[in-house]
Length: 267
Image 1 (cartoon, rainbow, N blue to C red):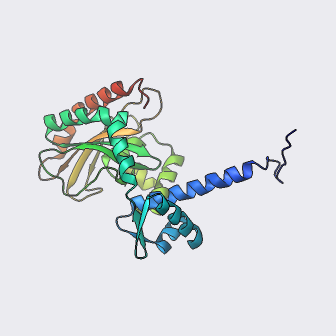
Image 2 (cartoon, rainbow, N blue to C red):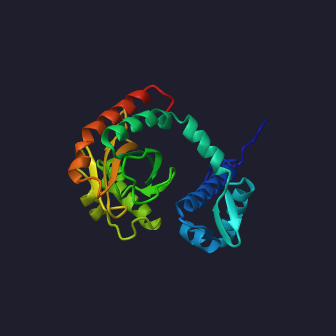
Image 3 (cartoon, rainbow, N blue to C red):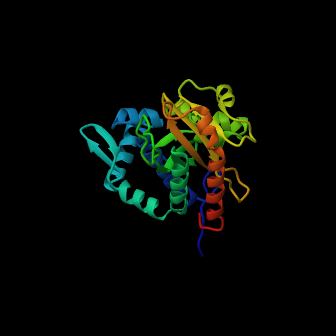
């Protein structure tokens, strides 16, 4: 006969190690995500402070991540390691969202002459997962996989259009902690957002100076709120606000087509 001892809280003792393991995994992912956001290698003390962890705990996590090639160390600084490349390649080659989006973005970019991009929401951030450049080069480098705030840029704002006040508070807190939008308040964010039933969001000079963008959400046919958006972007000298907004119908058709292709898929 197998017996189960209980902790002081009444929960089975076996749950203690499991909960501890999950907490350790969560902390490791937190450190890993912080390195992804960083524009340059990070020192141990900076990582520990930004993640709210002690130096010994952060160091133990970094050593484990190093063992798996997820983190590399140079002198006293840490950065993302080479093991992320096979994972990124597998995602780009096999993810149904990315595979379905590529020809759609190509068509949008070809018809509008503007850069077409697809973003997916990850927690309180958005990530660029696919892009086709337009005729005019952008003023800045925006690589695939870049973590970006939801609070700045049309592609993020359209995903927050119908968010509750509680969710906006969480989004603002995350953006402030990550240093992505350090002076932001929930009231200011609400004033930036389009109306909940708006067809698109527009931005100018928000994330990068001299850059215009318009975005629509990709409909979610399961009834949940959209977690992807498609945008058109251009440097200000190559297009106007009217030019970008004229591309909204094409964007909406592209978003609807992508939603149809994803319906019934594993995604």
